[in-house]
Amino acid sequence: MIVRSPKYFMEEETGPYYTAIMYLTIKDIHKSDLGGYKCVSKNSIGDAEGTIRLYGMYQVFII
Image (cartoon, rainbow, N blue to C red; front, side, top):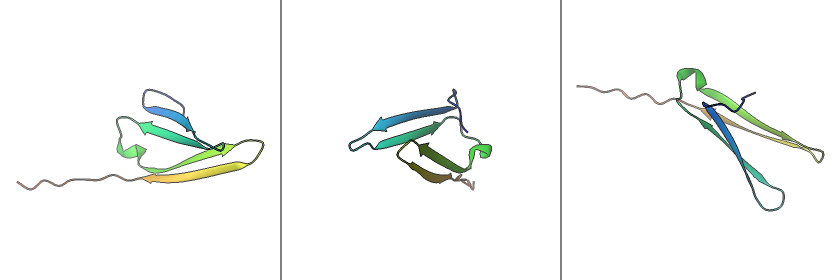
């Protein structure tokens, strides 16, 4: 579970018809932050979840 901190910031945007969009901002990303993230939402009506994978991109400079 990720807790809100200076590194992790979460916010929610409500939409029509009981929808919501969740945002996760990760500041100062390091190799240890790469990998899978899952958002889980539950209430008395049901539950939903979404997943995303954060990949690193490496640049090679040839001089």
